[in-house]
Length: 447
Image 1 (cartoon, helix red, strand yellow):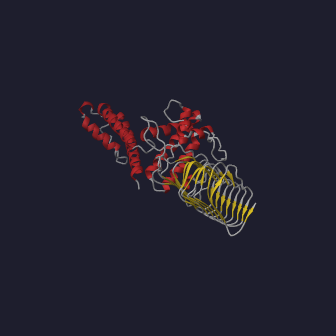
Image 2: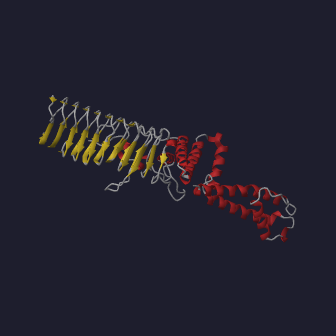
């Protein structure tokens, strides 16, 4: 079917259910302003001039699958109760959307050659951008319950304002790209559920919830930027110090110990993601790979990459939090090696116990106090040749002097063999504990 002339203007018309323009070619400007019910089909249509849909009210679905827009396509002040399905569509001109509300949006496999102007677009359900290609830098302001971006390519970067939930598995985010959360009317916390195997070399994240986000297989995590307002998971209390925890660690620990208080994958993620079954009625999505738990060594690699990203952003306290997680996962991974890794496990266990991997100053200071107190009592009772004539105060002074001076010449003239051994222990143990405490304090105050 060929429409041609100086222009096609519908005026106020009604599209009945099942109306089908499939395969039609619109040779001149087409302006649609209609009310409709049921489903209407514009599949495989060709639009050789400007296509404009203004003040459209439709109670069903609109299908533009494999449509070819050779010039601009504008959708303004439209209300579509069902799906706006644009799967496989190609936009050679400008795709502009503003003041529009749809039930679901499908842009799977769509190609946008010109940067679209997507203003205020309210999607009550899902917006599916799987395998879509944006050939120019794009700004997306799609207020959707779920933004499904599986293997989406943003060739020259994207600025995405997120109000709901997003899946970004296998997507490409070159610089400059940014995902930032914005509050919506329901006060839902914007969150990212998965970025598995995504290339995030140019991505900046801010104001989003990452407590349930899976990062397994993500590329160039160390080159991403972690901005302000990010929320990660927290370890269960009361036996764990507060720190940022990845969903992969929570899941791994819950598998290893079901009574540990750590959250399971089903507690972290949406029910449909756990079951791998998108809700009915949403646009067709590219199937996701089933989520699988990671081993401790692989989780340590994730923490290491994110730590480097925070170090590049000069966020020393944040990088210290990820360093703690990295060391915890290294220690967890060594458990699977049995006796072969016993020496390294012992060193890491002592490092964790004494100073929290050089990040918990209070632990080092508590152990220093215990070391001084124990050594003072032993020196007082057993460490001096003079025996009972030595006071507790004198023993304390000797202990403190020994613990705070590694290079001072030894003066063991009043010490017996036991006292000499205690002084040697203090000369090595005291400076080490003080250094660990100073290192922990520096990691929290370093700019």
